[in-house]
Length: 281
Image (tube, rainbow, N blue to C red; front, top):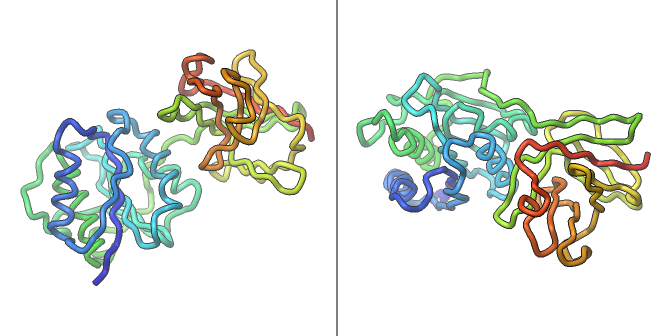
């Protein structure tokens, strides 16, 4: 029996039963499916944070998983309900940009607009809870083995968010990005790109295919946030207590932290603030 994984992220929180209802509906249709709650703590209606969480999670989901993302401030409007396929992953949710960063990093191979008559919802469709009445049902149909194309009509014009700031100035040896997320520990995730060590140099891979890789000297690179020069470190323990550091985070993106503190509080950083990576050629 197939045991695909449904991985769910929402902005429902945990005070209400809404997140649990999604699971109940899905396992009622596909009882063999496994379920993972990625997060239900996305800020209410925050599509950019949804897109980031989807991108962060996707590489670690088993092949054939269904990513169910329900952050849907436009519920009941004319926005489409979609199911999207990549080589190793399916995704279900509203067509509001929730899958933007996944699609920018790797273009999908197929997408459909979900039609209610194709998924046979077991309950009437409300105007305010499409997560329960459409998306959980569609995800469960996929988990039960229904083909993506059977869920609705093909679409090729997915709604995409504007990409975050990424600007290279080779003459000044700088890369400008912005703060795109603060994690639970107050660390700031940036759009500057994915850094990796190659021998004695660093290679910067633009996060969302916004340009070619950039090779730079590993020594002498630092980050500027506001008027503060922040050194690059390998890990938190390399910085003195209370000091700022920049480092390659678990998703590969450049992050800013305060050793034993919160970067958002100590450095006064906010979402969309610009930062610069300065390097030697």
